[in-house]
Length: 169
Image (cartoon, rainbow, N blue to C red; front, side):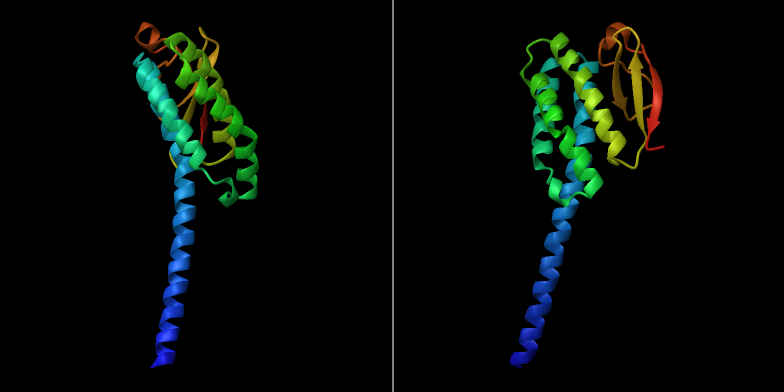
């Protein structure tokens, strides 16, 4: 009887331990993938010319990037993430702290360049990611949609730009 309880206890502990490890890996992979959606939220707020939303979404981006545990990433993904994490945090921090939409859009340009490097190095989604270019602003952004919605000019020049690359084909 005692032996049965000990075996059952050991089996239960093994299952619990494996579930905890799986949950941590799943939480981390969703954190790194969630960064893409946080980025899209910032972009969409800028398309709508809503600086308050852009600030809030930049704060969400910062929370998400701080939740990523680089130790659980593959070696290549970890190197890519670590090489960009400080730049991405600084870009998002600048968007969060900026008082003007024009400043937020300037910082979004830097965020987009750095985030493109991350998206190019780490698979963030199974969906296509479109890399867009605005010739008027000479700036780039990423989008989940092939149709152009320009975050740098909002309604003033909503469709200015073109897709120049598809990441995750």
